[in-house]
Each structure stands twice: as structure tokens, then as C-alpha cells.
Length: 270
Image (cartoon, rainbow, N blue to C red; front, side, top):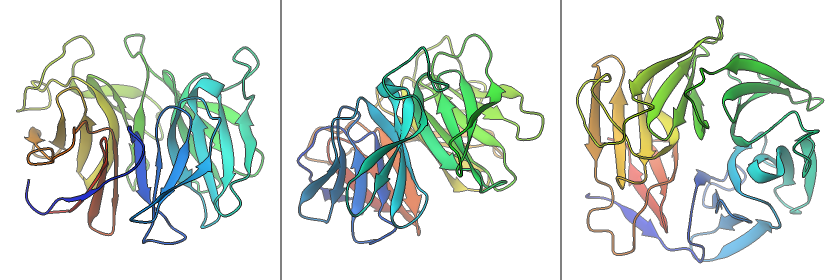
């Protein structure tokens, strides 16, 4: 794919990648294993380590980051400048006692900016920013295994991904419905939302108010899902990339797309 910039990094997996709010020349990413990094374009710096399957994160200010520390069953708060890590919500290390069971992604709620929305196993949970208190926001049907990523529209609706399917959680009714793919079928079929199949969706971002990009890592593709046109289109961002390319993390900032593979791909929105 033309106009792709490859940013090599010292780490292998990039399950979530975003431009740094404090300094837009930097990129923040997590490796899905133990560490949280900052890359300044030439060098990786470890901001936090000794995590356990860190996945999604959310920059709530230029100085504070909330991280979904999945296998520690909690959200951690990271000070962007000191690297200090503190328990924010849930009970870290104690599955039985924690109100979060497997948090994988987190965003600031666009309808209520005093709370976060968290993809947590088969549920969406809300977390108060002032206290860290957790509530169940929406509960999925039984055939969902784990929600890996979420994104929210301006009117509040939440879109979630679970490897083979995309779901919508309506903000006010809090019901969760299937909108694309099939929870029981693997594949790489483009076409209508109902006909489409996926093999490993782990992240999702809105590229227009009515369309999303998702990373389909086992197919090694980015998929464009247009809800108005009722169409799924595959995009091969890995073509011509010299390193091994497995799309995992995804974010869009200021008309620029950041894709976490084995390195980081940077490309313009079109």
C-alpha cells in the first residue's frame, strides 16, 4: 500500500498504539505482554513494566494514562512523566475480589466524560473517573467470548469486536446486537455486513461517523466496515512492508492512521 511509513521498534507486538497527547511527535504503545512504551521516532523508552497482558489504554490528560491490565483484572493509572503506576479500578492480582474480570480496552465516555467505558470479558462496564467505582453498563449474549476493542460514536453507541464479529451496544437501551461477521464462522469474506467473515479482530476505530476500520490480524488485513453502505472491504496495509506484518493495534488522530504490527505503520487517512 502506497504512502506507508514504517517505524521500527525494539519490541515485537503492538496491541494498542496512539499518538502521545503530551508530545505529538511521540507514539505510545503496549506490547500485550508486560510493558508500556514511548517511542520518540528513533528510540523506545519503557514507561511501565511488570504488567500482565496490558492491552488497551486511554489518555485522560497530558499527564495521566489509564491502562487495561487484562491479566491483573484491573485498570492501572500511569503518570506519563514519572512512570509511576498505581491501581485505579478493580482489585489488581485478585480475580475473585475484582469487579473487573478481563479488561481489554478503555475509552472516555463521550456522553458522560466523568466516566470511562471498559470492554471487560463479555460486558461493557462503566468506571467513575473520580472514584474508580465499577458498574455493569451492558451485558452481551452468551456466544460472545471476549470483547477485545471498543469505539464510541458521537451519539454514544458503542461498537465492540470479538475476533470474528462486530457488535453494537446501544447507549440508552444498553442492548448489544450483532452487526457484522459471525461468532461461529472464521473467514475473510468481503461484501455485505451479513455476509462478511473475519478471522481475528482485536481493535476498532471510527474513520467516519458511519464507518470503522478493524484489525483482522489472522488474515493480516485491515477491514473497512461501512454501516451505511452495508459493505466490508479488505485493505492490505502489509503489502510491501519488509518486516513481518500482523495488524493488531489501531488508532486515528488528525487524519493519520497508526497501526501496530511487529513494528508501527503510519499512513494518511484517505
